[in-house]
Amino acid sequence: MSELFSEVDEDLRREQLKKLWDRYSLLIIAIAILVVVGVGGWRGYSYLEAKKAAEAGAAFDRAADLSEQNKHAESEAAFTKLAAEAPAGYRTLARLRAASEAVSRDPQAAVKMYDDIIADRAVPAVEQDLARIRAAGLLVDTAPYDALLARLEPATTNTGTYRHSARELLALSAWRANNAAATRQWLDMIANDGETPATLRTRAEALQALLPPAAKS
Image (cartoon, rainbow, N blue to C red; front, side, top):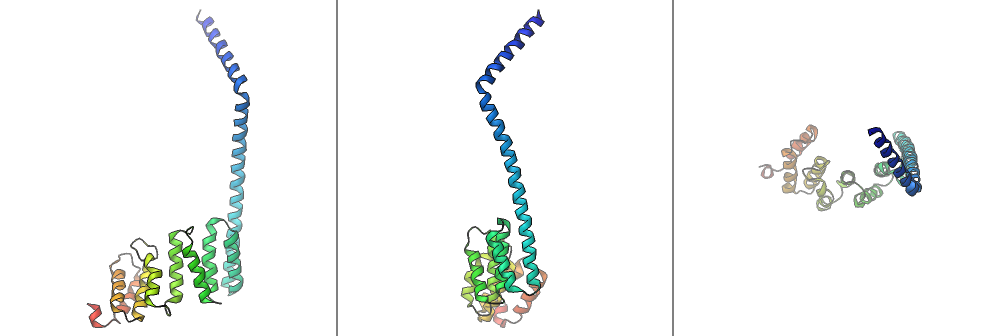
């Protein structure tokens, strides 16, 4: 008797499955096709992105080689092209390198390129701060202290990746401007930061020795 009931249940299940298939077969097939196409498309996209990244990496290396050969104009052009065409991961790096290569022909043009990076909200804060440091390094001998402060202060926070260099540049700029109080302020920040690199700390101590006695206490 139990076998008879089992056969009846099995027939009912088959009938239900057949009804479901008759009703939803087209939808099921469509979903299956979409899954296959989606997986294939994703794999194709991943392959193309990996290929683009590899090509961009090779182009970046070639541009860097030109720089090492002192072919700065060619290197700048190569990095500029890369910044316009490469995947996102390489664009900002290429822009930074292009600005670096521009220094040899026109420092002010290089500063403008760094400023464009700083103003670009799509650029991560770390790369923006690096652009601030590099631009300030070109201006430290000529720009007023207040102008350099406006540029660099955002990079001097306790969590800033390049805070040590930013503070050192501001200390040097303040000292050149005969602003002993500001010089001491930045030197103190350098001295009190436990993560200040040893070589930078040594330079800061040397600069502090140049301050007038009243500013040292």
